[in-house]
Image (tube, rainbow over all chains, first blue to last red; front, side, top):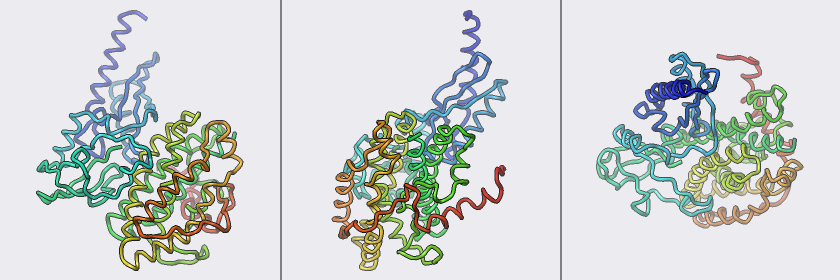
Length: 180
Length: 259
């Protein structure tokens, strides 16, 4: 492959990334798919087909179909053939969310996920009944007033990835993006 | 072909419990639980899709995730019998009774505590596709377990009424968990090839989760003896056919329909 071809390819890949960076999560329109850690890579096949690698979030997340369609439409708009490849391993984790994404979530009123703890399934921390977390590290910060004096009101919120919380200082209810 | 039946067994278990729990959609005891159960079903049906897609590839005969879920009969399903039972005590299949949330919670607790152990082990399966699905499913089932565990403690350590209902549900469902520890042909084969899990080796850990929770919930561990069901070998209770009838009716009325 000549160096001019390589350059052309890298320019094409850059172009695809630029358009992918305009695509947001259908459920949380303030963060992009890349910031969420859903879009993992862009590859260009010799026949000018762009392959976008994505890692799905929750197994039953209905937004994944929309994400698939959005990516195809956007990349086709650039004049490429496109294929979306779903990559299951390593499994998506909220730890892949960029700091920018977490800050945007906060500004949008959703508490950003704490870091995922890797315990075994019978680790007491995973199944312990606790409405109020025992230590500051696992405390959930209110996206409105930054207080950690918060309680969980329901394990599941408006989507599978979120839990419902309430701030005991400003009294505001809010969504918490659960560590995954 | 031993892996195919093993994958179908996992897929069928996910879809049958997902369909059962979805019966609460619009009928939940409180709004938050209505939403919780819909999300629980969404996870389970999502897991079943990943598994059916894989099973369809293994069959390599034109099968799709939809044909496997919607166009197989009850005797072809390999789910645990526990998962097809209705949300109330022992009644015939055509009986209609009020849905009892304690049955839902107890079943989710017994099953998700088991699957948390199974998925954890399957992460190191020799079958890399299954291992990838297990890693995702483990993250989800831990939240299911946490939910069921918390509610079981509220019920058991709640009012006399909630305590009695939780105990009755436990007495009703516990014998069905015997099926977790029996071997079917495809499980034995999957285990020997390093693809499947030896569930018997998980029993002690499972019992410790159950015992710790029941202690906190002030509930008694009922004996799990008597008849051993074998849904995973295709011998089901009458309840599965009613469940599948509802789940499959639309796809069968409009085969290959798209929108």
